[in-house]
Image 1 (spheres, helix red, strand yellow):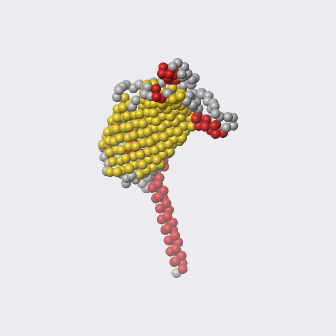
Image 2 (cartoon, one colour; image 1 turned 135 degrees about the horizontal axis):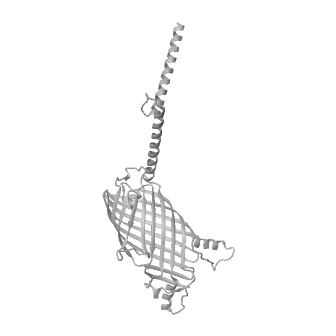
Image 3 (cartoon, one colour; image 1 turned 90 degrees about the horizontal axis):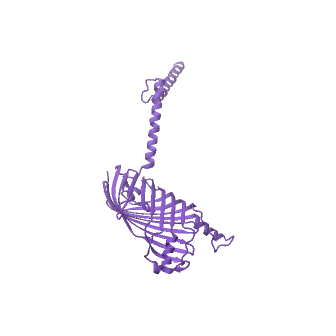
Length: 385
């Protein structure tokens, strides 16, 4: 009896071992031969493994790029549209307030005439380009040029700006060495200012799953529920201001007599700016297909001067720490601010709306300080297809 039980035990162990070995071979075959477990050819398996690895790498690269440019969002908050193309016509009205100061020697505030432009804009998925034409001049001028391009995705954005602004400014305020000349020069034309800016700005939308920057400012998606998000980014800018002191001196001397203002030896300001940005945006869905959006960002940057300008603060003394910090700030620190607001109606294939943007730029070179306020108001209508 004991002998029979021992023989039965040996048979069971042998059966379980064979079964486990068969299972192992089956799993291994299924992993290496891709659902062909009953054939084994070493060369064929190696060839198929190579093909699978190549396909997997391409698919991984595609899915990685798609996840970066279009990561998953909450469909309860954002309607991700499937349109790939966009076209629209936009009317732009722009105003600018330019202020430049040189210590106690000069304070000048000037404003050009309001400009109204119209232009086509065209987009393909994440890339959006546009061109505005001045209604008064259908041809682009080197002294007055605005070019812009943007790359929009749900998680981040990239803005490119190229501005060259010149033409006739009108004096709003002028002080020279403490003497206020505003009353006699207010509204007088002055064409001695040229402002240039080349700017690349990158930002990241922290709450991209619920907040759609695209719905507010590129009209490619729709916000279904109200949401907000913190915005973080960085930017690079090349700033240039050319100021014609001789023209200003001639203008002042014709009103107040010869030698009232002597042209100084410095006239240009040129620098590279490296900034970090932080802000907050909020989308308010106040009715079906309607959206009101607001966004406020600020930037703190470091300036690398490209023009050699010596500056000595007459009020500073050797070892004066606070004056040293003040002089460093006037020469190497930049402040920027950006306020956006839009109201848009968007039912998917068609959209229309308005948008307002206010930019503030402050930078200097130690001797001169420039403060610019630029405002733009847009009215647009377009379609997605």
